[in-house]
Image (cartoon, rainbow, N blue to C red; front, side, top):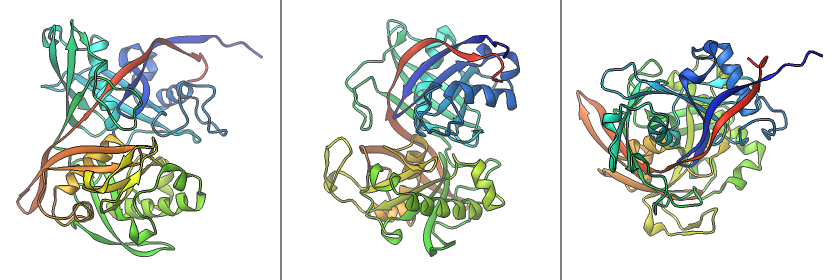
Length: 395
């Protein structure tokens, strides 16, 4: 057998919010991987260690969960009024593909910090001390994200006392603004692709259930927990250890994807695992988070649980949090009703790891709901930097 050498690619391993992934400067990738296509996908899969029939990612940088099977590429922006272009790939764990259909809201935090770390920012825009405003063009969904990154001595400030449920240690707070988060791109048109705040969704094997289907932050299908046999206080083990429940959620997700026009046939969903998300909501209830922390109903507006890449998420995806905040701001959606109804500009929801607050303001324009901005706080930290190695014939 011919021995193939390994090549070295500069990379940074970062946590952003409750996710982590491998970050690259686009220009550091092999030339044929700097453009979309099979070579890039194969490279990222090899970096992460996919596809892995053992679902362990032993031979790669991934962590065998949807929160840790991620790659990011940044470059100086080609878009007017932006600092960097940010491209995100969700690498499938057990199948040979990379899903480019959406963004990662958590890693958007790290994208802002990495832009400074990697020298992609105009030096005149980085203060010696204070806050650096990083204008990010999210290339997957063609949206603007503004990251307010704390800077000390000309470098990203990573340590601090900001606590984020789902992250073990405190860090410095980064405020994210998701501008015009409702999707008006190629995937679905208006914020509500069906034209309704609530639909009767036909789900094979389950019958008809109520659903709010929204494209904001990321396409998401919201259903009522009680209607599908849950309380909304479930932790990961209650769902992820039962294949029949995961199959039930996937059936709902596929039905929603078809109704939203994101896929043409049920079979298409296998190649679009990242979107739409499926989430279930319930009025506020007391529960014990996965860390053992007591969450009181009086401290939250509602409970939300969401699945990512076929498994219940350990906390909450950042983009799904944008969808939650947006839907909560619009009277009549299932999310808004679970939170008690009425007009609101922010919501604090319970998730498996604790709570999260997200703000959004909705207005009606020409009979259509419009949200100009959604805001949340996260944190980010460099975990390791240097090079990743992959076999030369891997891509």
